[in-house]
Image (cartoon, rainbow, N blue to C red):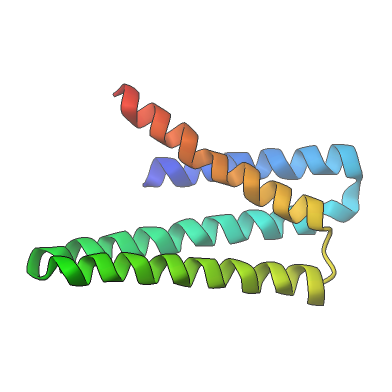
Length: 117
């Protein structure tokens, strides 16, 4: 999981640089915010996977339920954070969502690297 975080941080920095270059300095905070949401999303996923894995030994159904609850938790978290970013903080939506999406590409890169090992 550590490699995934490293890839995500690198992609967030790339997103910040790209949005700064193309749209100016007002996108820096929005880009970092979107990247922070993506990294927090990954941390929530990691914690939920560890929890579900330990539960699955004793009760497989509870482990699966734990995973489903994690999906709902992360979805609500993202909706709330994007709502706060766009509605309350008035951050630049393309920079925020774009950097979030770019950070999610880390899952593809990480999965490709793992499948080649």
